Image (cartoon, rainbow, N blue to C red):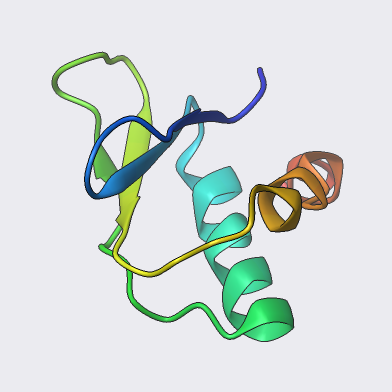
Length: 76
């Protein structure tokens, strides 16, 4: 499954079926691009099943697109 990003809401929400993928994305955004203002990963109770987190800081969509989901899934 691909990441789903809801750019139309404030704050921006990022969704995926696996919590580990979102945690990996958080690390990628923090370590590579300095993005620190975000929520914790939580269950997606509105659109679930799955998980989401919120970004409270500007983020270039290319930073998310550059994240390699496969590397996280291989570690599981």
